[in-house]
Image 1 (cartoon, rainbow, N blue to C red):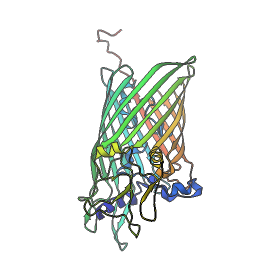
Image 2: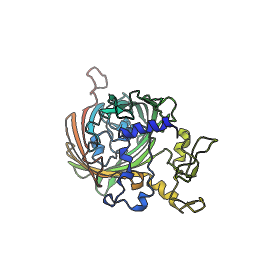
Image 3: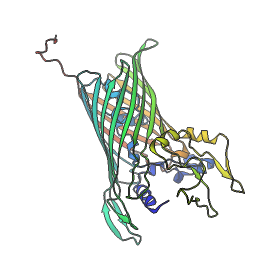
Image 4: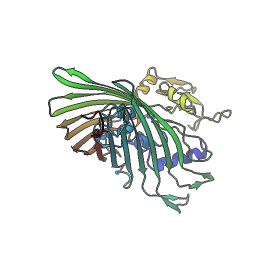
Length: 434
């Protein structure tokens, strides 16, 4: 691996972005990770993972799941196609969350989004700005002397359009510009760093059926799908090999039941899978270092696939490229445990789900759970949330409760503010006005 690639990745790790995916540091019985899992940790890392952080408190209170719940302006993150079915003419949301406060005191995520319905009432457009601040960082040289102080940050700017394709189905497309400035141009051993930049798209669909009956109760069934962050790879140096964006497949259902005139409850589940290459297992030399192929300049893969592929090949190959449980015999031959490849592919699917209860469309209570396998990051936590809505104003809070020790996500608090405006009434000059 070239030094500039090591440097770029080291910058990301040093700034704490990938801490939430570092399960290897949690290998202990205290965190309910068995020795077999500790021996087979194979987490998937990407550039700009902040794009996957849940930005709003509503979904944050439901286990970080929101691909199929009723639409609002935060749908630009979860499933942009939902905004075609929004009831309000215009909505704006603002969210703020301190992030990884158990590790870094001044890291935070801010999110601003808006949605506007078009006059045909069957389509909408919107935009959002996500800003991730990593606090104050002091860069030092090999001798420990201070080079400079810097405040690394990242942001993503989105534009979205969605339209109803029928009375129950909509489709959406988002275009995203991503900018990641982690180093401020610091040069190390001749490797000049630069901000990473990329352009990506989200492609999504949404199905809703508000005409169901469950016994004597009215119900609504929704289903959503969103493939997000499909875009060019990102580099942090002029000569570095590039890293994948966190291309992600998210899908799942939601069911809402009207219990009576004042009470309703929603249950939802999201399934997530990163559509990027899984790190393979390489052949090792006598010093346990990966063997480099002099012809290609890449390490020789023993099981799995070479991750140095294009975006399309990485996406489609992500369903079958897990190396599985690999051992080497005394002659150096590779042994892959039967069924372990398929098992690892299943482990790459994260599951999130929860519920939302509303009283009189004014007071909400939420709960949820997020599960990620121990070998793929080991994020496991409960969430709680609450919301209140008064006329055009809505306020939501959520709180994260980690289920394992020393979890850097523990005690994460999110705050969201929402302003909604009903559809404009027809003017008295309108000949169709009543």
